Length: 204
Image 1 (spheres, rainbow, N blue to C red):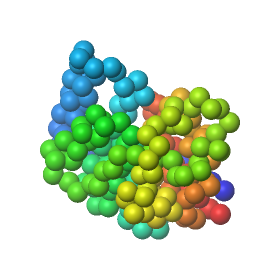
Image 2 (cartoon, rainbow, N blue to C red):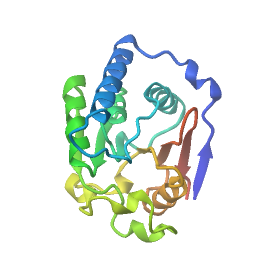
Image 3 (spheres, helix red, strand yellow):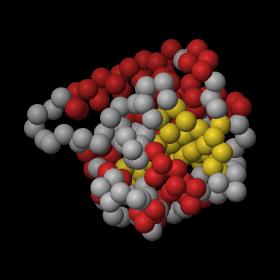
């Protein structure tokens, strides 16, 4: 069972370190340049999150919520900005990304930020998780079929905190998957749109 944890609305007043703010701004510029390219098809499922707000919510979570460990996992890591932020906050960060072009940009982010994050190409859904979906057209069901967890040598229940930016309508599916495969005490953070970051703990 998942139990919702309310992140206070005042979280957006949390100061952001100047150096991190510059890194986030630079990364957003990289994303815009990537999306403006005309020489390859657009990756429609990649949308940038509000990275300052995600930082503030992660910071609050680390200050106010106990963790069952230090491992952080980003589902569909894209440019790996959130993974890099997690590493900056002292977590042991990992990311799983199905799109090779995005994975390459994520590795560029990690190198530029000079943080330690392990990134792998593959599917962030644990094997068998697709059967939990009630809609066969959900975007998460149509990624690289290779098992990202096998490449990491870990399972979903080995992580303390998982972050995802679900496509509209997929948030319930992500919650079902997390509830089925995560360990008791593990946290799930979902960025669901402007000013909408949700935090859950698996309690049983």
